Image 1: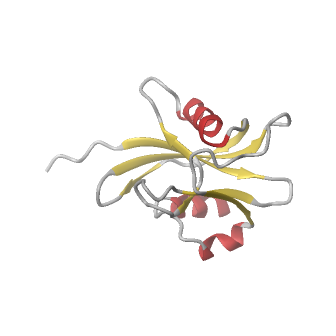
Image 2: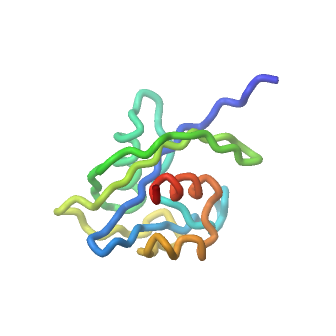
Length: 133
């Protein structure tokens, strides 16, 4: 059996000064409808994961972020597709406007210990575990 090609995806744990992180609720008409996720998106060909993340955050949230550090990448198998996740810890740039839900159903700033109470996308649990260690 030939392994499926993984879709490269970058995501951000955006921290604020109070220790909260930003999560976004996926739109009802997309894969993983209405689940919560760390914002980000697909990495285009010839685009680095970091560049893709900053582009996606600008397109989907209308904000500018700064990458603080990368977390370990990993593969995650959903029933319909396999992704290769490239997670980063970020903060908003000093001159950035507040994030807006331009492509999501909702945004929420939450404390990390509150995240298990949300219906998080399955691929975000390893991101959270890596972030908390």
